[in-house]
Length: 143
Image 1 (spheres, rainbow, N blue to C red):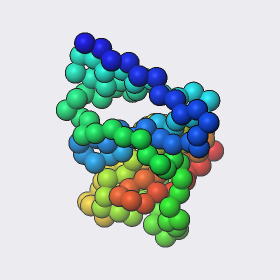
Image 2: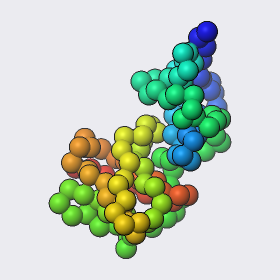
Image 3: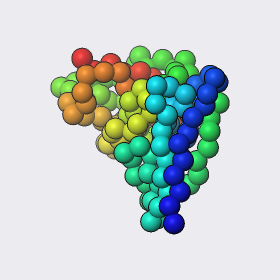
């Protein structure tokens, strides 16, 4: 059995389709932009655009009133981050995720001892990214 959904919000302010994974990570797909996401459910997998998730990975999905993670919650990253030799260090014991501005997860930070996470920025293309951990987020620009 296969289910395919084309998600569109016509004439409404932008919202996001959110996939919440079993580990608590939330992945956002912007609705109402130039192109809205296409979701297919088949063979034990949920596919959104080119991203695939197994049924066991997905806790739930929902439409958010917010466009997170591209919206920033006012968190100041100063003093909490350090860039050294192409690695961005974030002072947190929480899992750190890196998203594109359209909500695609592109990287996860690696914790080193539980006091900070390291994100290798060398593999990222130039652009704007959203770094998210817990309920905090901030924008990062890769030149």
